Image (cartoon, rainbow, N blue to C red; front, side):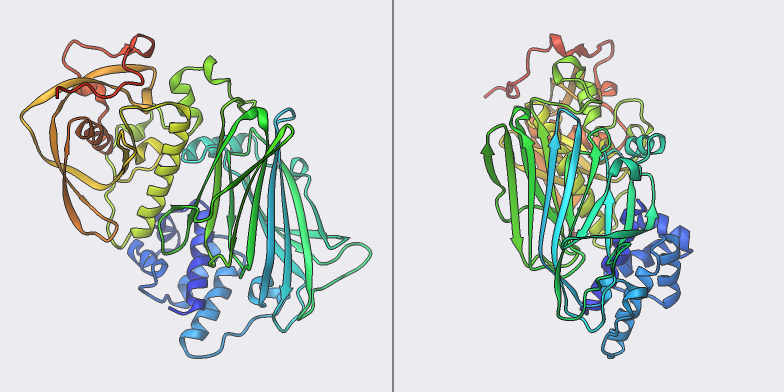
Length: 494
C-alpha cells in the first residue's frame, strides 16, 4: 500500500470518526454496501472516484477526502503525486513538516476551566507558498457515553466566545476562517495574515505557530488527544494540574494498524510549589497515530459533579461514562464482529473498554477482579474486557458459553450499571467459552471459580441479561452499605 493510499484511508477514517459515524452509517448515507466501506478502510479495495466524492460530501470534509483520493489514484497509476495549490488544497498537500510540536493543557480548578496551548515549529518543504494552516478543536465531556455528551452539547454548545481563541505566527497575530462549526467540534484555517500585513510561508522557510483556547471543565472531558496529521519530527505534551487535586495520569496510543497500547515512553512527573506537571514526548511519530492522555483527580471534581463521598456509587459510575440500569442498551442483544474484516472496529471498542476500566478502577477498589462489557459504555457490540484479581487482562470477542460444570456456588456480585446494591447469584464453578481473536481465529478457554463468575457476568451483559434475573427466587439485592465483602477475595474452599 502506497503512502498516498494510506493517507487517503486515514483522511476518510478521521472525518468519519469526527462526525461520529460508524461504517454502517456512512455506507447508508452514500448508498454503498457496509462491507465495501470496510474493505476501503482496510486497504482491501481501492474505491472509485464516486465513492470519494460521496464520502467527502456526506462527511462535510470540504474536499479533503477527494484531494487525498486524487493523490492516491495518481500514485496507483504510477504517476508522481501532484500537490494542488495551497489556496485550494491547504497545507497538508504541500510538503509541510512539523519540526516540533509542544502542546500544553493547564487546569485552573478554582475557576473551573482548561486552557489548551499548541506551539508548532513548521517548515515548508514543498514548492509553493503556504497561506493557511488547518486546526481542530474537539471536546467530549463523557467519553464512552456518546448519548450523554450529545445531549450536553445540544443543550449547551461550545461557542467561539467562550473559547477565546488567540493565534500568532512568530510575533504576528493571525486571523482565521471557520471551516466547520458544530456543537462540540470546530475546524478552522489559521491565515498567514492580519489587518496590517500578509506573511506567507515560502518554500524552504520555517516559522512558529502558536494558538490557545479555553474550555470550561463542564464541557471538557478528562482527556487530551494529539493526532499526527502531518509528518512530525518530535511531539511534546504537558499537563499542568494543581497538586491539591492529586491527579493520576496515564496514556494510550493507537494507529491505523495497531490496537491501543500504553505509551512506549514513560510520562515524567515534576512537582513545583502548588502545581504538578506531567510531560510526555516521542520522536518521529507515524502519520495518523493518536496519542491520548487521560487523568482522574482524587481530591477534586468538576463543578457539575459532587465529591465522591456525597454521591451514590451508581452516580459515580454514571459520571465516568458507565451506562446505567434502565437504558435499553442493557436489555438488548449485541452484534458480533465479523473478523478479521472488522478488526479496526474491534480494536477501537477494546481500547474504549480498557479506558473505561481504568476510569472505574481509579474510582473503586476491586479485590475480586472486575469486568466491563461494550453495552455498558454505550456500544452494542459483542466485546468485553475482564481484569482478574492478579490484574491479568482478558479480552473477549464474540464470546459464547458452550459448556459448564454441574457444580455451582452462590456468591455476591456487583454490577457497574447498578452499583448501589450487591446480590447473591448462583453460577457454575467452571465454564467453557468459545470466542475469537482479532484475526478471526476461534478459541475455547476454560474459566474456573471467581474468574468463571466474572466472565459469565460479562457474557450475560452481551445477551441483555442483568444478574438480578439470575438470583434465586424470592431473593433481592442488599444495599451496598450492608455488604461486608468489599476489599476481600472470593470465598472458595481450598
